[in-house]
Image (cartoon, rainbow over the protein chains, first blue to last red):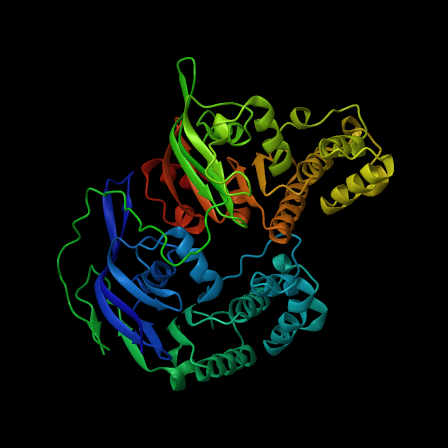
Length: 234
Length: 281
């Protein structure tokens, strides 16, 4: 089953004070089958993160379409209403960013649990699941109740992974999730991704070291950036 | 994996505003809907063609510089004032399809008191500074017809507690409280009748950063637990990012841009929004 059909997908940033557009990627076409793991590769500045953000709609795609087959029906992520994007973010599409955005006075376990209890689970019901996952990613129990604002980069990233991967999702976008992780946490992540993939979850991911997830990858798109040439595919 | 090449040059030198599709997957109806609000004060246009929708459980942030019309819109939504033109409906039993601006003064006040709570930047607007804090909250409950002192006090205590106000100070008048605590009393009063809509006008402006974070945290928790539709006006983009799901940017009484909060803040489309975002420290 095709989960995502991306057609003529283009993003450029129009910067008003410069009076011109800065292109990020241009006229991308690809399809993604449900359950596949797609690697997005390319040099710095080639538009890899921008592509993920356009699919999540943190960035507004300039033109083209990305038709996603949701459980509620087909929808073009490029132009879907905000309310529909919010629904998909709550229920179907997840995003693992490179950095945690901790909130003051919110503990690690609560930050992780809240993505679950947004879906009709109470905080008290969600907390054990959150703590279980934090422990999987190697966050020590004495940190669960602490505020991640003061955590180290590696600790924050473990909390971030737990937060992003706790709720069931059909499509997960991964933006360099292994950055700032040590080998143990990286292994924990790969185990988690492998389990999710076995459950049928679809992934689009950027990895600084793709060999970390070599066994999971089903396909690759390489972005070359619109300035230095065409977009190629393997 | 199929990829094709389209080596055409980018042709968006003239950036057109992108229009989004109507909702297709979402079954819920917006709880609050305002259409075509116009409001003038003499020669000043405070709101022009302002339309907005907020769903239950959603937070809409309104940003813009002073004088952009943010607070005017909030006063209209609180039914404190009437617009020169526009419609305002709430999807609540008994009010479906009713333009609230068309109700008489008494009906409007009842809708506002029962279904809408508001927290002002200036606590003097929302509180009687010399009454006790508990009395301020209890006053809002009198509208239900409750007259028992014990019941009123218990309800005030519950609401203050939900606002994380220290209960040992519930009989202190707001004038002796800190700014953060005054905002918690306002919040307790605003949510005492469990309104479906909560309006916040710069609720944390002027508070210490740590106090601000604590108040934001309380708001976030309340919003989640009570599934209210919330509209927050702030010029502080950090506050908006922490709280809002969607953002509306106003300038000169007009909405120049609206969208998902992360999209508007990370990929602003309009020249004015780009200026605002880039001006943030």
